[in-house]
Amino acid sequence: MRVNMTVNGEPRQADDVWEGESLLYVLRERLGLPGSKNACEQGECGSCTVYLDDVPVCSCLVAAGQVEGRAVRTVEGLADGDRLDPVQQSFVDAGAVQCGFCTPGLVVAAHDLLRRVAEPSDAEIREALAGNLCRCTGYEKILDAVRLAAKGGVA
Image 1 (spheres, rainbow, N blue to C red):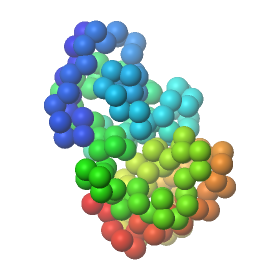
Image 2 (spheres, rainbow, N blue to C red):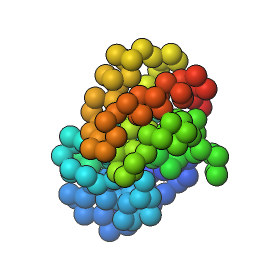
Image 3 (tube, rainbow, N blue to C red):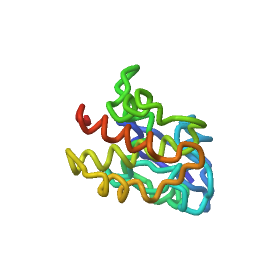
């Protein structure tokens, strides 16, 4: 089947999509957007989180056919050309990136939180990131990154 969608503000089309194919697979393998990571394929780790019609979803759990005519925004789509989004930049500045596997999902989750809550409490940050697993950082630098982004604002 052919799937037409808007990805990061651009009309995109994926051909020969089979009915069980995930949005994650289409993004990574068919559209060349490797930012979202394939870690658990069960919606448990958050590494594949993207916006679908401005709602964060685990793209591994979304069938590609469900995206027909809809808007997807990936971690790549948060940046403005070569200029990183404030959340992306805060992860770099706070040293919150180690292996980088969980980072895309954490960035999207933090971005979503800061769109909703300008100055989140630590409890709100922890709740917003609860669906994202990281095995490297110990989370403190990630929390620092979200706090830093909150000081600078989110686009």
